[in-house]
Length: 246
Image 1 (tube, rainbow, N blue to C red):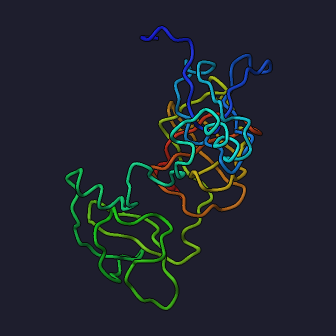
Image 2: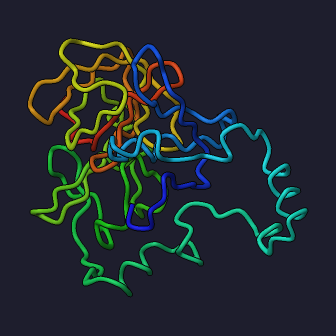
Image 3: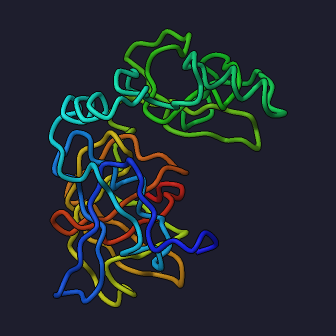
């Protein structure tokens, strides 16, 4: 608006189409499902619906785009694909955090749900829910990260069955397809960018809180990650995952 422009274009793999049924522009998945990035776009403000252009929406293969870039003599025609955290060149996010924030390694106990000490960790920010490798402890069965107790600087681990949850709460809600959720709704849910969609029921239980109940237990539900709700190929909306409740 400041530049007196009507639209903004972005290189994300997603679609924006007008839906007569919902009488609004809707955010949809790209044709190339492997590249689809609608998950990371759920939080866009509603007023941007219909104002964002996705030129890559209908491309099936990156080689088609590179060929076009070559024809237009763009310098980035053969630039390698960016992956993971693209602005961290060496892929070491821990090193990046330590150099650009006040975070420093702080050793603490690795414990099970009962509080039994099984080993030592090297800083809570170095671990993620569901992680198995790199824990530095030996046990009779494989152990996975299942939670954090930051107030005690403890890393909580458990057996494989303990990384599965049937239910979660989501807050910081942003809805795009509908204005509100007034009753239980059957949806598909992604709990992280790389995960597959899972069938679930969502229900609004507070002004900014939605309860998600999965049809089957889901692994590695991680507080702080985004949960995005889909109806077919349309993004309903989403929010941030709170601590798993059961």
